[in-house]
Image 1 (cartoon, one colour):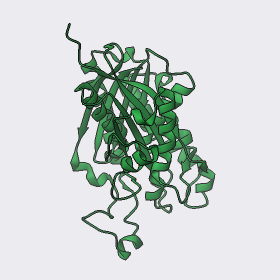
Image 2 (cartoon, rainbow, N blue to C red):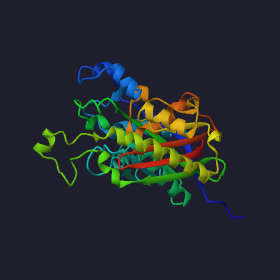
Image 3 (tube, rainbow, N blue to C red):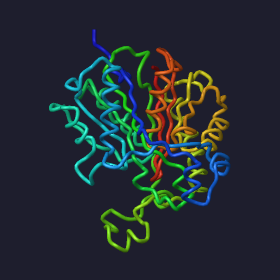
Image 4 (cartoon, rainbow, N blue to C red):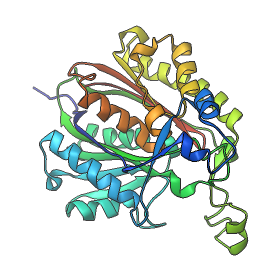
Length: 331
């Protein structure tokens, strides 16, 4: 009897957060803002910042070790490492390569995916495709960012939003058709490039004394444009992922959205007609951790028992580009 194509299943989850906590009260001393102003507009109360002398891969390493332990596997069992990030340790090689060396993996391939806050979902979809085709049987998928390294701490429109963190999942191949990643949908629209980007530091505008003085190596954002596109795009792509899996919204156990800010999350829940009791929220404690936000939330809910075997999960994200996506999976 011919066996069906394998499906990618989540075998383990892990996460890592820097020890340093930056509260809204601390930001009041840096910029013209207040706890009330930040909380009202974003829902964020505090965020984590990676200590000096540490890189993105350091966080990813600890998150990966926890995911491997949860999966009951060793690093040598991995066949691929894919990391979603926009804050690699070096311009090249990839932070996935750095992570591979830290883990002591020698018989795998690794690479980064640059899709901003949607990087984890893009990496997850790629790993899922590799497993479905039979190219690999195991993969480590990481979403990890240190956006504090890209912030202008005098710009209250951006410095209040972002935090650092890392989340990881270990995927394995399974022929159990009822579990695993059941649908993935991805999309981009490059006409929005300058709505959320870092102006300098690439080949178009290499680093110079002038670019540093003008703070062009920090995040520039059109907040109103981001809000509008984020809510609309995540709703549309979520419905597409559910349609592909032939699942209705009210059949979803939990929604794990990108933790951009609370207003975007609540607006999205309203448009999907999902009660907030089914929506994972931790943006109040960690801020927007970019590619890390979804796997961080996933791991947190696994650890506290909110996600259990058989639960139907809808993960959705949007990031600079714009790029957006959704993944529907049964845990």
